[in-house]
Image (cartoon, rainbow, N blue to C red; front, side, top):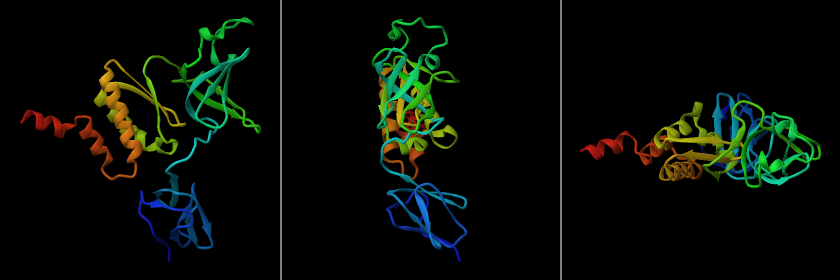
Length: 235
């Protein structure tokens, strides 16, 4: 008989048995040993139907093709720009993937993206030698002006976004800010009110640090001045 030995969002360690029997399937962060599914890393259990996965609590960003990331320009070359995207290897944007117009040889490329600029880009290729190619051509991909960038644990990105975007929508609505979340764990926040920007950043920090906590959405709603707080102020 198959049996689940853990609950959703439980913290588990490598070698811990998560389920027995053949009715359940191992996914990321787990492996099968005979009729057991065990954890291969420290992380949070995620149960989705018959699938069992473990989401790592910590760890560096591991780039994958088609990931949408936020990067910082750290170098300008003759043929494009080199960016830091929070992993062991720098990523590159070629002229072809960085601008729409024709650029003459020898032009000052800093007029397009300068040192320290942040961009929202998509990974188009990762070579065998770990060279990462990015593009800024695509829906929502662009240079990020103004605003602030903060970093969270890459594995916590799904929790910060929430189911069908529920968590990030709540934070944006309550703080009247624009927020973009890269799959590398870099988050861009922009708003007209600096205090609300900070409020949004603090809310994201809470989600990042307490991602395994039950009732987290209600906690964030209350922190941002949810209905309960508003009603109390009126009393």
